[in-house]
Image (cartoon, rainbow, N blue to C red; front, side):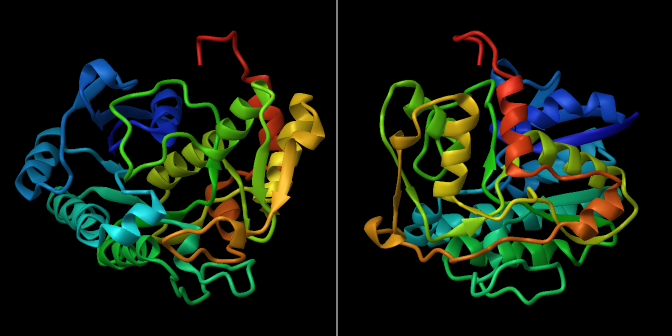
Length: 306
């Protein structure tokens, strides 16, 4: 089995990678304190530390590295640009050097928001044009990674799912809860959800994304791959589908315009992506929003165990 190093895997996608890696032929490692990590083999690493990153990769010598480490709060990145550059670009640059030295394959997680959202339904050949600084850093990281002889770039969108483990202290630089869990948490408490109706993306079940990342690790193909759900929806439409599937009152979800949510960073209007290239290359199918939500419902376990 091949060694897999998942960098920064304390969040939703990392927890899914931990649970799925072995079944897809990997011995998984990740960079988090053992007591807080779902991985059997865990190390500590600040990916912005050049020497520490190279030392760890030299010692483990993974065949595949998946980089999930990033500042993901879009508004935080807009107002903390040096930090966003250091983590999102500098961290990727360190991993590129480490992967090159150890002859490993690097899988870089990017974002759908490298596009400006003018028309949507982008494929991998379309020209990026980011509107906010978070997307600028992710696009620059793509460029850094693309110089490797063995790499893949995955662009997901609006990732959701059950996060089985909360690790570390919450930081304003990251997202505390994915949108799917946020909506269901409010609905469970009979609270209203105000969801934006005029911005569109492709909600991506974390399990689906994790499988795609692991398959990219096994794939011989280099390049960019769009790894999103199949449905192009507004946040309001997605929240309404969650409400219907889980049996909550429909009127708890209220549509609002993005202009009613003042934000530091500009958001693209429509960043929906086409996934045919990734599905063909990886021999898998991405789920529609309805299918992903039904899978979420199937995974529901007794309160207190999520």
